[in-house]
Length: 511
Ligand code: UN1
Image (cartoon, rainbow, N blue to C red):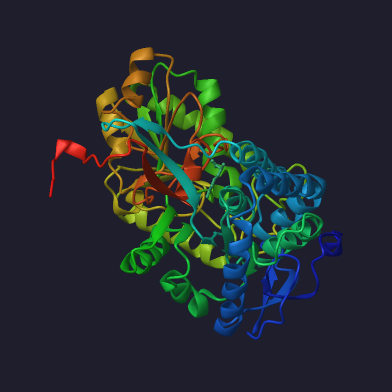
């Protein structure tokens, strides 16, 4: 590896707190970020502690008073400049994401592109923070709703998309007039530090007050619950496991704060006998093994029509065999699958493989750790294919690793019911050329997920659509469509220009 972190402004030891362009001497202990690729040290961070956090919140509160009165399209211009800065840094940042998270370079670039896309989306949205105008039931009254900024938005992100998820949240929050405090995953703090360095010049050039784009690197054990409990943060957006989401939501809920929850998925692909199998397999393989199975949208279950089950199984095994040759360093051009993020993830992978077999599953491919010269750390695994039944406890859980469960069905109704019969509800799809099946899958009696696709996979959503899911996935929506509304408070306004008092519902109250 001959990548120079200085290009992105990252130092050997970095402070864990920034309010935009300024960095603060944090007082916590130093933690190191190691690459999952080969265990080499990337850089270190001095964690923030609660007293550091207090300084940050004070700064954010002050900044909010200034930022919220800047007209939204002007805030959009700042976001436009952030997008330009990210474009310039795309190659280096994509590399750093690959280095720190372990996804292949191509996907690292894709992740940065996702951020650039949301910047462009947010710039347009900054002129479209529209509310509705309603007709009043009272004469000479006008009624409308409008959206105002909400205040400080806490953004808790996970390791698997170490930069893009911040982008989805922060760019919409920024055009909405909010200020953000970003707490990245402690597995990928250096990517967050690089982002902060990349945007800092832009923030200065645009005269953005310190305290609008804040970053705090801290241990969850120090900051986590305090952050969630802080009444000064009206909205907390969490991307991560269902377990983490439930914990944060309970704390935020207790103070009646708001949350955007984007949690675990258990995403299925229904493969109908009417599917174009060539195209289906391509999508399925990317969804199941891409990012080494570490997307919340990764394909975890294949629900296959019984008439084509054996053919799908055999072709899938053949595809996995060729993928097996392309596992290695994500920085190598030939690689399609990099390592898991750390040894805990490997343990969870092996544990799930073992457990599902005890429950009755049959391992038909992979499912083991890879060792040898080609694998410079202990984090590489051979993606697994397991024949299983939907109700097995392991199949019902999200294991953040490349395991795909093969499940048989006979009728489309049964396939839809299997798709829905898990606690999570993020992404789903059906491969079919049959219109009736496709429409059934998308109808109110179809998929119960936040994302439902026809003839394309479960992962790789575009930013233009609202992103998120139901049930244990948490119900939140980020990114496109009208997800921006979650970052604002709605106000209903009625103006009386009749010169008289008129009560609604025709009530008279004369005295
Ligand atoms: C995630 O895994 O947390 O649809 C997000 C996708 C990406 C985002 C994934 N656009 O797979």
